[in-house]
Image (cartoon, rainbow, N blue to C red):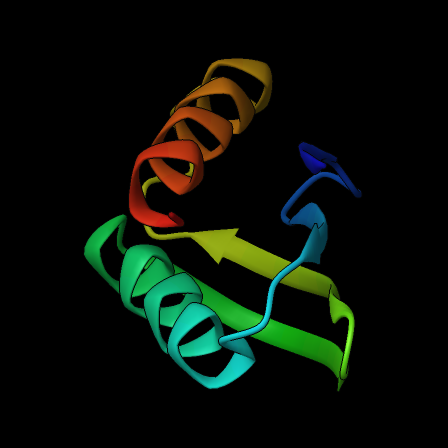
Length: 84
């Protein structure tokens, strides 16, 4: 599951739950994707175990004029491509 949604007027929240055996690589790809999208991470809570990953990340877009819902869709699509 990958879901992005507006958190408040300035930030977006991203939730990721994945069954993944290569958690380290996935977490690195996740933050690389956020960097490439020019998002500033304000808060991150990433948990991994033998079965997968659960991440809740609050980000702030560098371009505040972009519609939050449009940006959420772009984030979800990009993460689907980035994460194997």
